[in-house]
Image 1: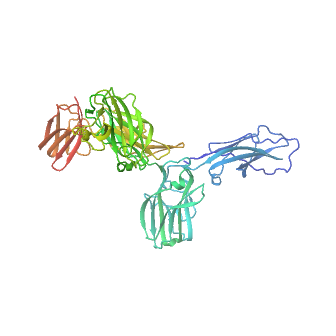
Image 2: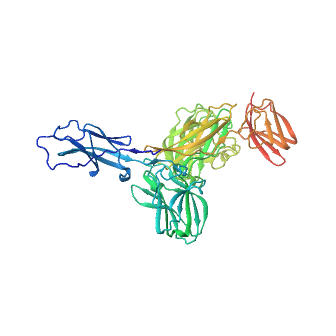
Length: 616
């Protein structure tokens, strides 16, 4: 139960020794001194002098100060010694042992080691053992008892008024707790507290304190009084990181006051001490035909996001002259639009090239105009007709005091090389073009070109000096969550899906620095909306959409009159719309392509949304 880790070596003093060494004799030191598995082992000298010289024991010294003495019965025996850790602080120590003879004391045999001991985190005390001794609590007063009549639930530790104390300070002190080596996250002290008061004097106190071996001072981290009389069970959550992180520490509940007769009892229960690291939040899932895309939010000071003005989809259109031409295209952001990304770096640029004969350079500019080119990087082998993700040779620090322009340069002998979305244009931001020796918008060049360039850039910032990664957990159908994969970025694409299965996900953050690793708690659970077969999402049973997957016909049933049904493709484009005044309806979907569709059903009083698969 007690998790000890110590490294100690020990040395001893001599009892009954004579003042002078026997002439002509050699008095050898211990053969070896070694700590292992909570025990100091002292090996006998490699050779003993023989009669009349007799080995009678060992002296132990810690950091050159006498610590203890051990006597031996058989000089040839190996001696095991367990130190008293109440008198030995954690940390680096030098341990030395002398062999004590009846006529002399040998020289030292020494070793250096690290002493670490105490309960490992997490630590929990609910008093279910029925005593203080089980987990080595030390009450400094008989007023501290265990109550079987109170608790949350019972039993609980109780400080009673009797015997009446005046000018008192009575503590209930924990055994040491070991957080050495922990550097990441926070250390929390949770507990439940209750007061039964007799008088409301405001001077009878309960102080919650933390002590560590580095400072050797008790720090009060929370304080309560009888000023407002009784209070029922309160759940407290106290961050003790400054006093406990990377330390061996103790906690104490200290009852103090002028006259204990002014209270009936303090009660303490459910003491929980644990380390917790911050984690990601707001996990969402986007379902596609061949994969699920997971995205989640970070924390303040952490950015890993793509910014863009287009809708993320190539429309099948591209821009050019059909002849030899050079031009630049860019998306633009103002300082006000970049203000949320303080201290970020530009790591990657994504774009959609459309002409195999063209040469492409990704570029970054800054300033009004723009006036400064800061990146000009050749794309050696662009893949035509799809998104290309280009990592910059050197990440570019983002200057949020200047306009940011991100795009690419095109040198083409033919064709229409620059991919666009289907608009409408975010004019002056998503459609900038350098053509005929001037920057303009596409609409200024040709009012019919109401598009945005397919351009995006990845902004990343991490104020954390260690390494951050994410663990992905997945649950299939009605199974249990299992570790699934690790990801370094703030999104994850699961390509290993089967349409007939149903998946749920959760994500944790893993912090790693100086050998310490801390995994956060999980995000919210994000599940696929699609439920194949005749199953329906738990969110609504009043509307039924089936079968799923569907082939040629899709059935809609409702307990309320159906007013309208709409189907959308994954791009959000409306594929079908029906106005209905009935409790059921059958839709011919035979002309729709196979894929995933959104279904929106409006009834008299609600709107129901789900996803279906059309599969042939």
